[in-house]
Image (cartoon, rainbow, N blue to C red; front, side, top):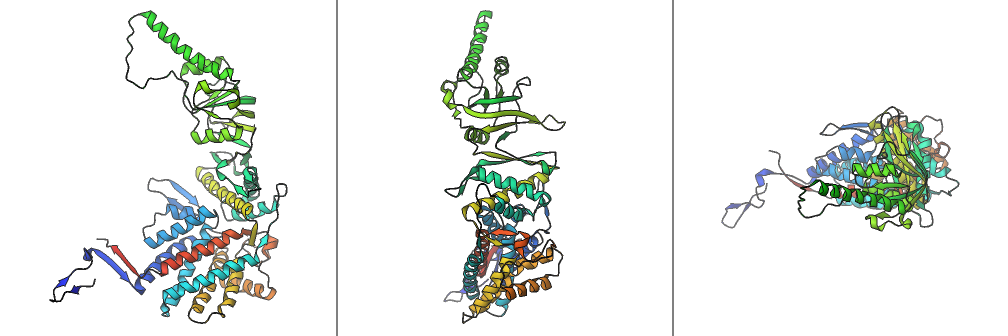
Amino acid sequence: MALAFDEYGRPFIILKEQEQKTRLRGLDAQKANIASGKAVARILRTSLGPKGMDKMLQSPDGDVTITNDGATILEQMDVDNQIAKLMVELSRSQDYEIGDGTTGVVVMAGSLLEQAEKLLERGIHPIRIAEGYEVASRIAFEHLERISHKFEFSATDIEPLVQTCMTTLSSKIVNRCKRSLAEIAVKAVLAVADLERKDVNLDLIKVEGKVGGKLEDTELIYGIVVDKDMSHPQMPKQIEDAKIAILTCPFEPPKPKTKHKVDIDTVEKFQTLRQQEQKYFDDMVQQCKDAGATLVICQWGFDDEANHLLMNRNLPAVRWVGGVELELIAIATGGRIVPRFQELTPEKLGRAGLVREKAFGTTKDRMIYIEHCANSRAVTIFIRGGNKMMIEETKRSIHDALCVARNLIRNNSIVYGGGSAEISCSIAVEAAADKYPGVEQYAIRAFADALDAIPMALAENSGLQPIETLSAVKSEQIKENNSCCGIDCNDVGTNDMREQNVFETLIGKQQQILLATQVVKMILKIDDVISPSDY
């Protein structure tokens, strides 16, 4: 650390406790930052594309996660380095905004950093590199607009949406039944979508999983699935045309807030107390019956006596239903959530065509299905699978597919996948570099080279010769001026992504390029790292 001397030649300290801090400055700092950014990108590089590998992460308390989703891998990885944390946030913001393409965005940022390192070694100033990248990312952004296609779909013709969701699912572990899962995702989104406002509220889609069965048994339920059973084993298991009372008050005698003591010294007093309690329950059940309810769903528990009374008056009931599920049930059935028994009126009841209890396998597991609701704006995707990890991974994959369908409803432009969009952008950026005099030209060319990293990784993961394949596809694109040629990962025999039906959303791709460029600019501008040292 630098020592400074005052006018009498006495040294004094500038940084407090400087011997306990480590400091990297200038080129060393940039190289260290770039190295840590590249290290994160290298981890994710192998899980890109349909032939990408999965990662297995074990958390400190022994939970195992097996996943292919970039955002999940980085979230669980527990990164310590500050620059690596930036990469984690990069993939998280892609996940929040778009939902898909979380691996690609990190790979892209890693390759931009790699190219920047070469330029730094030639002695180009980092700010000039950052400016060049900014220019190049704008060129690529506009070029994506030009090569994109509008995708026409309607509530009846959902094939285009399904094809795009299948592209997303093909890189996941569930790709053997991607067709059915993509259809489920699209139907779920269309059920809750507001097509005039082009808006989708994904909170209305509940994704529920249960171990057992096989992946093909995954189904879409136009209604709600609650992981509970009827409160009394002898209540009817199926109710047609149910009128549902949704309560947030318990079937219990009221408890005063103050501390109290009841002295009972004779049998008669005990009898009156008991009758009083019984009357409470009687009134409660009667109020539900009077409102015309044929099913009670309650957030809290029941007294045994209340349960027995409900059973006697044949009023089926479900207890301990969570708050979020209550809200979804209220949305689906068009009912109101009632906080007190006195406020129950027939208008506040929800309606459902069929409520049934379904048992699974040989276990005691039962779930309640509420179907054919008055307002089918809330749906449930019910996932089955061999083990817990499979179900968790399927949930993540379905989430990606739902996000893709939502993005297409918001903006129905698509570009072709398989690395074709990146190669096309790379050619366009390379061609545009000649127009810029000065040092930025190098950075723009480097950006074009960095764009090739995604198709390279795709080819590498598919077991093809990366450089040969990439140059073959690139020359084909230039010769035929066809921006649909990509890497043939699945060995179909054609490079044309239109024939392979591999699509990606335009906003997802644009977001990837913008986010990656922003993060790289930020990393390049850091030239001094002061951190507390390790000892």
